[in-house]
Image 1 (spheres, rainbow, N blue to C red):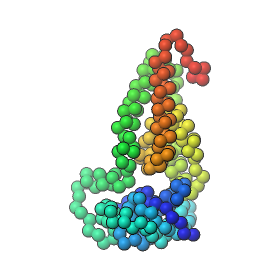
Image 2: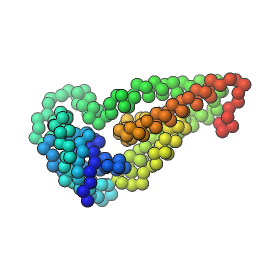
Image 3: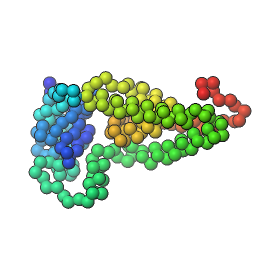
Image 4: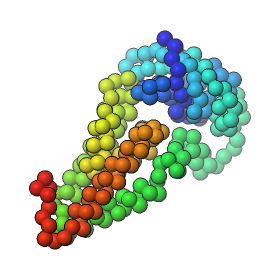
Length: 232
């Protein structure tokens, strides 16, 4: 059955990538030999394709054809990855930079500096709150376990998206972030390239970060005579 989607990742060196379906629920693998465009594909290219199932490896796109071919010509890194195209000589550092650039998000979207600054402040609040007994002693180790569970939830959802299996609801991922797993959620989005390009999800994610950090700061800064909520 013919489908349409958008290329969300393209690895020019290894000649494969992933296509997000129109509803954004599935990521379909495709190889350069199955691409029928004049130049190599690039991120953002809208394509039509035939989907097949390859054993237990999940969906694969065949006969991939560009719907907006201008995107391929506009991407120098895509052209460099086309079959037969000469590859420029590059240092290892340059190759690492190029590899990160073609799969990463724009700095304005991923908010790396802001996220890392917030993480430092969050860790400082947890440490000081536990040391001053303004937070229960179990909260820091509990936060570590929660972040581990959050990263695993993202990894599991990523695998499900690639194989077409049952997905983790976005509300569950947001709840984990709201409870304190937001640092691991951010790292999973960057490292696994999962949910990092979906604007609506990212906006809700940052709302959960703001709510959690605000609640934690209020707990730590509360007057000494005010007891902790009973749930803690």
